[in-house]
Amino acid sequence: MNKRIHYYSRLTTPADKALIAPDHVVPAPEECYVYSPLGSAYKLQSYTEGYGKNTSLVTIFMIWNTMMGTSILSIPWGIKQAGFTTGMCVIILMGLLTLYCC
Image (cartoon, rainbow, N blue to C red; front, side):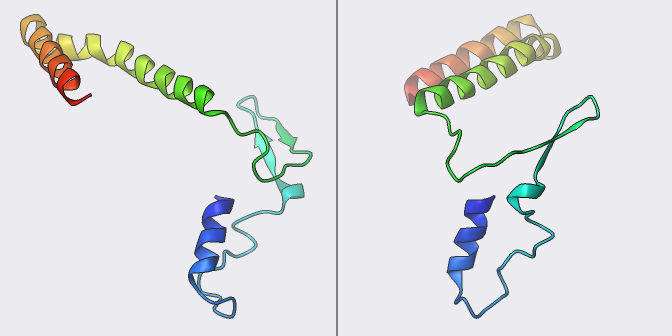
């Protein structure tokens, strides 16, 4: 979000305040908290721009994991809704389409 705000602030002259985010939208670094599902909040010690970024390989595996997890959960439901024969035909058709496109 910080990069987006910097980008928007470069779209206009510094004198034009139309695209500058107000202070209540983007908190200062010392006011950033991480909230846990258990109801507690942890204050971030400090952070810098670019700190903790993932490498390209890690990003690829994270996207792969998300896509495979979604597929594993949705394919059985889709086959149940479409019927076994139609579901298998759709999977084969999508596989051939993916093979052709990729």
